[in-house]
Amino acid sequence: MCAASPARAVGHAFANRSPRCERPQGEPLSCDRKMSIHPNELGTTLVGPCDDFSRWTAIQRLVRPSEVVDLRERILSNPIFHDGLIGDEVGIYLDLMFRQALYRYTPDPDWSDRWQSAGTTAARGRGDCEDWAIVAYAVMLGLPVDACIVTGTLHGRGHAWVEFEDRGGWGLLEATTGEVDRHIRPARYRAELVLTIDNYTRIKPPLRTPWAA
Image (cartoon, rainbow, N blue to C red):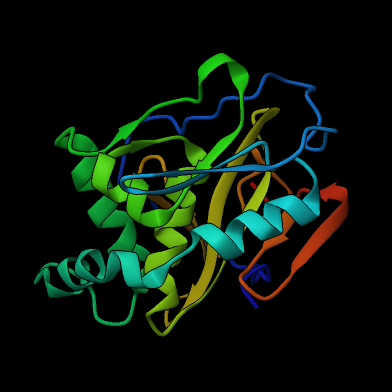
């Protein structure tokens, strides 16, 4: 399962930039706002997926593997990638795109919470932590890897990232930079909600694994 982590700690990173997050410390992950749908020329944007069920509904609607087929093929065709280490391959690609300024982290306006489809974010080349996590997850769904989106906090601020398990074992992908940590969830990440296409799981209390560094 993607949330399981072996105890052996071997971490590495492909980006020296800090991950991005947008919600201020202490702001809850649930609220009373209703989810609304806004079609646009590139896809669909859901506004206000605040409670757990709405976040899961957003994942079901916005994670569209068919929208990122070309992106997946570009990732797999790169000769520098390691065979079978899907998480590393996706991380390297995101790192290169961010370094070349073809992808950008763009926070939602006015502390709002807007989630974009995978195709919308990839085509625009900009999005926040949830948007890039949706892109990475959508890419992985078409590959031999077990993956999920995790929401929680990073350094005490609301955040989203991807956790996966491929031939190299368990890993965490920071989708706003391409950084990958293997076999360990760093202490700065606190998982609260695990989301997949099929289901969602609330972690109570928020989980910071006992083996986290």
